[in-house]
Image 1 (cartoon, rainbow, N blue to C red):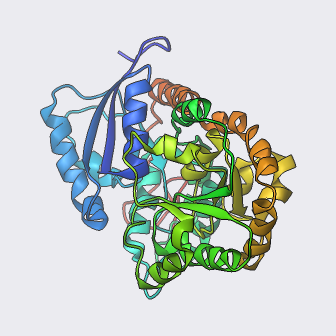
Image 2: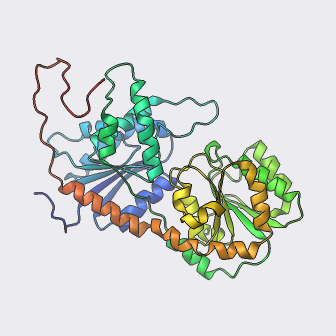
Image 3: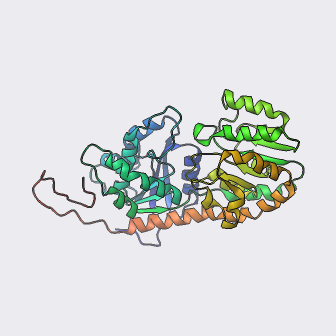
Length: 398
């Protein structure tokens, strides 16, 4: 019997790469949803192998749990079409929502790395197997859908050209949900900040986040007489590589923290700062920036990716820059007026709450309920002899 709109659903949430933002999303949603959520996860290592073996591993775990769930919520690391084929015979096909934190079609590559389009193809087919596809930002949705037609045209034959339209029709945007209340609470109990401007870097120390332009800007700022401090957080901050280490050493005692903070201490560390800086060339959403804004920090961000959407229009000219070369002069001006910068950052905490966990959980709850209540599509009409090459559905080949 189908569920009623008011009844909580029995959901299975599948996350084969439960680490970092993926883990925060999965565990946060499981804990806050109005539905009954069973989380099936795997450690966040060996991502390519996770995408290959997770369908079998998770299908067997689902089967071992007993009765089938009323709906599935899967991260885009799940090969959904394969998973559905491996579910026990006789199980009803559970309606599924596929959630994209990132994608393997447009994710920036490290220097010298080639793109393995097999994993992009897995995600395309997973989109087709899902009843609904969710992206964590409008930028991410548009980036993926914009790259999809060229990818499909590049296939040697039997390219499902119309799949881009089908995926777009079932796509929506729901933010991943950030624990903004933790950062607002840390800011509320923090003593009023005085003294030099304190800058925060709270991103992964990897190529797509581009920490070197940030460090070069700090070295140029340090050549002047204006005092400042810097907090270097984020995964890998204690082992950033030889080039970054040489630049950090030149900053000397201006570096007041370096390394990944414990989860319980991290909100207070963020709240001890005044400005959050990014030089990333990849941020499909910007969780680290939303956390910093929730603590009242003023962000300084590239005018690209999802960053403009995180800011109210009246802050975009002030807080966005076009080229890394603009950073030293912008930071110099802000470091000369720390009190003004602190006052300007405080109102952004209310803006950051638009992406808090409660709001995004409610949106995902509604979508899952609507998906579970939606009647199944009718079976495709028989359209001619098998193997005739006739198009038999909305996703024809070209």
